[in-house]
Length: 179
Image (cartoon, rainbow, N blue to C red; front, side, top):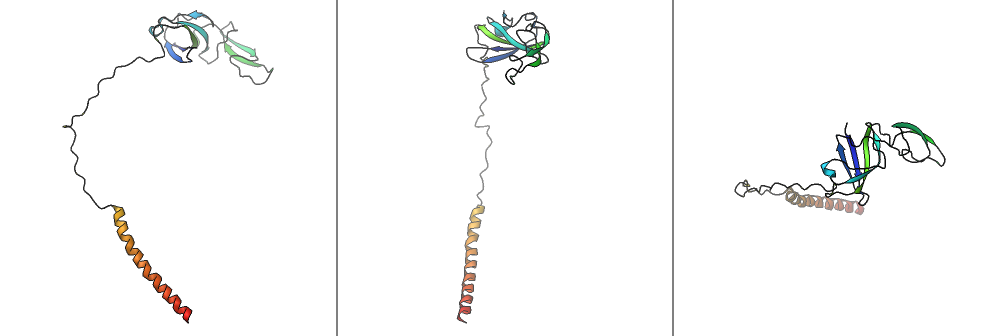
């Protein structure tokens, strides 16, 4: 089973997550132990175990000696503080790295030659540029009168038709007033 290593740099605040297939070197280590991992990415790095969690998601706790235990806790790792003095029974993992440990949190004590936080630069292949000869020729666009111009031409006729209608209504009203 693969174990995830979450490596944090206290100087910059950056973290890096790596996966280890062979965790044989890490088994039996405890929270607070200083280790070196045999990986090409971590050559020259000295790390310290600060915590972790098991496959079920229970957090590792530095004051528990056995692999899993239900503890009565007031505060600390694995417990959100509810009220002052309130105690709660919680399941936690022990401080020793076992085969059930799924994630291990580490901090950098001594950095190696290469930074693990910088991505390796990948050389890009040169992009091919299309030649002007290969570009398809565009057909000339035909000019058609726009729809807006057609509407503008129709509007003056409508206004002329409306204007005489107002005159006839006005004259009929004037005739009514005279009578």
